[in-house]
Image (cartoon, rainbow, N blue to C red; front, side, top):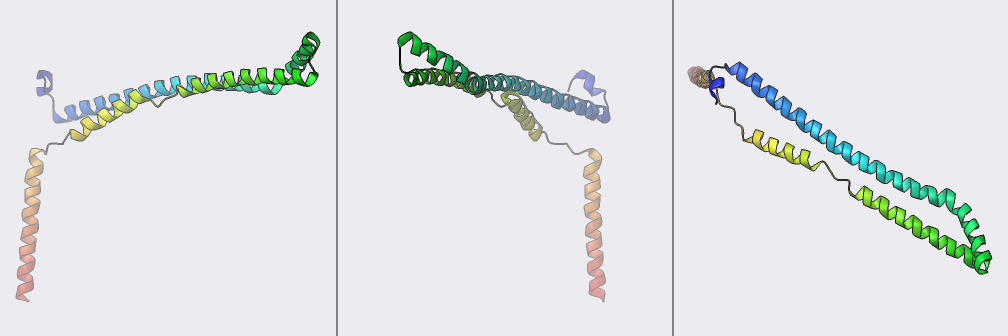
Amino acid sequence: MSAADEGRSLGELVASATGELSGLVHDEIALAKAEIRQDVKRALFGSVAGVVAAGLVVFAVPLLSFALAFWLRNWWDLPLAIACLIVAGIYLVLALLMALWAKRKLGKISPPERSIRSAKESATVLSRAKPRPRDGDSDEAAGAAETSEARAVAGDRAGSSA
C-alpha cells in the first residue's frame, strides 16, 4: 500500500479498485476490437482477390479465349480445337495462381492472440485475489453461530421435557 492509500477509506479504495478494473476490461475490449479489425481487413483483401479470380473465370475467359484461340489458329496454323485447349490451359493456370494468392491472404487471419493472452493473465490475477474479512464480519459470524447453538439447545430441552 502506498503512502497516499493509507489515509483513504475502505470505500474509496474499493471505488478506486473498481475503476481500475473497469479500465482494464475496457482496454482489453479495445485491444480485441483492434485485432479483429485488422483481421477483417485481411479477410476483405483476400475475399476481393477471390472475387477477382472468379470474375476472371466467369466473364473474361470466354471472350479472351475465343480471341486468343483464333489468333493461335491464324498465327501458327493450328487446328481450332487445339488452339482452344491451349487457351483454356492458360486461363486455368491464371485462375489457380489467383486462388493460391487468395488462400495465402485468407490464411493470415488469426484469433486476437494478444487480447486472449491479456484476458487470461487478468483472470489469473483476479482468481488469486481473496477478499479479506472485515473486523465486524468475524464477530457477527461468531454471534450467529452462538445464537443457532442456543436455539438447538433450547429445542432439545423442550423436546425432552414433553
